[in-house]
Image 1 (tube, helix red, strand yellow):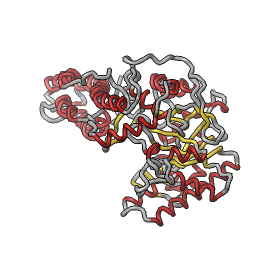
Image 2 (cartoon, one colour):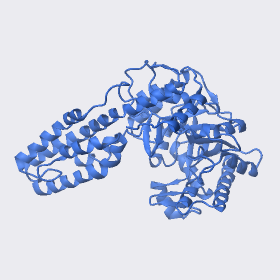
Image 3 (cartoon, rainbow, N blue to C red):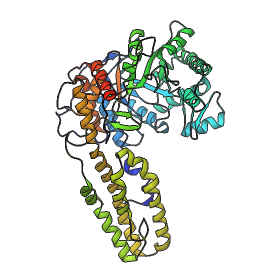
Image 4 (cartoon, rainbow, N blue to C red):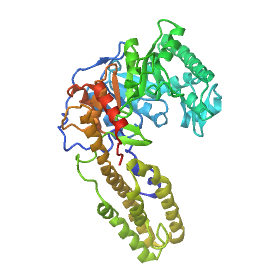
Length: 507
């Protein structure tokens, strides 16, 4: 039975940031539950051969059986590249990766991890050791790529993953140095030089780790590789490789990672590296390219999930559907008001059901619900329950009601999430229409598979990292490389042009 302790602020929203969250499968061609075929690609000039779809470990957590099953399914189907980081779920992502990997031949897998963030356990470590060159970006979020800090991070990653060697180690978003300068009138030319000096010194240290057999290759994961060169915080692949070459001709800087999706295609389209795009430059220089967030796009300050939530074209649920969801809550609240004459959550005889009936229609998406629920719904609800417990705690009727109420609330919040997620299908339908107009061959594939298929077929891109915390998301994604090839670059160019020439409706 649920208790108040098992009712944390975001318990009803655990899966909302998964790449495939809410993905609808029923309308589309069936995904075969078989091993994927051998379509491995060489990761730049590293000599490592990777499957074109990698397992992104951003939100996976040791102890979660669904996450473990999904990772095992990915590996069992022939997937072989796992991307994690020291800060993902405060180290528990690496712990789960290591727990699973011990059951597979080490030579069969490619392990990518990253370091740089100071949060959680790392914050306590940094406050104790006072590492040099820490960027104190905001409360609870610092950043550092100094060798003294990186040395601790590599050892912790090895310990958590029970490994002797990390295949690829990436500096994790080092541009925090530049972004922090933007908060203070923007980075000056001297700041850019200092930034790349820090990158160079990190590379110098990572070369020693390669020599020691602790890592195989290294690189940079940056959210800013695809930015226009006019952006002050843009990070340059060409400048990074300059710094590596300045250390030694046989350097091991051989992998980069950046976000890419239909809406954020700068890595494939922005000529910001000596007249070449990041992908073109990396392809020429033999640098392996991993991309993240293939299905989570940021556009006009809003998150757009590139997935289907209901059958395409299906009308989203309206006010009457919401009332039906909230009716059991309304009934149980009226029971409390009748039996104990207790004031309801919103005061007097106005309860949580009435509040949600007002709030939910104003929300744009499930992610919007996630952002407001904790502060505006869950926290006041906790406070009200505590007050009622203090006042009515000895009354058996209150105790029985409280148990029934808490048992009801979490599933109800999940119903609200599904209600709002279904409403996002209008956006998905528009994305699909624009994708077809941009040149994607008409088909009955899910939007998520089409969006990933575009990326998989971009020249110079080696592996698309996808968040797959459930078995059905693994099944949806691992077969993407076997879809018919598409003219990916032309599709991305046309899709971007459509965004520039006509308004995109986002809900």
